[in-house]
Length: 431
Image (cartoon, rainbow, N blue to C red; front, side, top):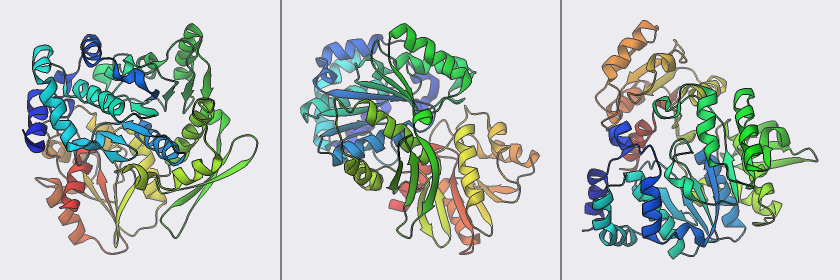
């Protein structure tokens, strides 16, 4: 098999959450332990920082990787899902996994996989673990898929666990309340291993405090130790975030432009402080790493400004908390008319999400090229009932073209609602 054939096999032969949804979800870690034994426990060869959370875990993972890379460590980074190419999920020092390794890994393990029938996610996790061992990384930043307690990545023994925040998402797997979801995320907390919580919230805080007491694990709340003061935009398409750590004001320049990145930077700084005995870094490394997160790691789809005439932004926010923050930033961004290219997946509460959006925008309802995409006709009907005016388009490309044709240079175009809408848009932009 060549690379394209290998990827096709992976996507079609293994149950994939992005494609089939709940059918790909495994409700225990039995396969993970089988794969771990078969693979020779590769994740034990390097230090690990394990990251979970409803929103922000991808950004924090990339921030930590960028800083540690700049400090001279060899850094593995595992995140999901990918936007353009599978290899985005598995990187060493910002470089995607080699195509030849992907091919050989699948060929070498195909018979065993067909015997135990892992999910696509389980396969990709162990490919990452094995690749990082082969590349002799010093540390790997490992992001959970969804949840924590039953996530395939939760077999690792990290030097720190990080939970960025808790919001309502993936309720069919994790529960329909902050308390239940927090319990699932808290499953990554290990005995006597420090844990960093990005955002303290009354209900989840009780869950985390109870779990860390049981596990005898030190707990650190980033938003209590690092206070965001203010941020300013620079002419170099960066923002300077000023954060107070209780002792001094730290100015951090970053190429991540979302206002929500300010709290993620606090989580990153807190985590670096917690692991400083095992992974020491200098303040100069922190500043240099955070200044070029996207360039160093290839991060995409976070308040990504793809054009400025008109201002065109895509962002993967796809739940109530994430979209609320995006809409607040859109509202604070100067523009004349707002154009919204929107699509969702069918397991979301679409009416609840649409209720967040402004009525004075032009809407272009569409669907991503995945099986789980919500029908744009149904989205249109929900939107119409809420007073949102728009039209239906068969795909993201045609929806964006229509928005582009109707937008003046002083307008703002937003593409989002789903990770996969952004993926389709960026693929089109790349082509």
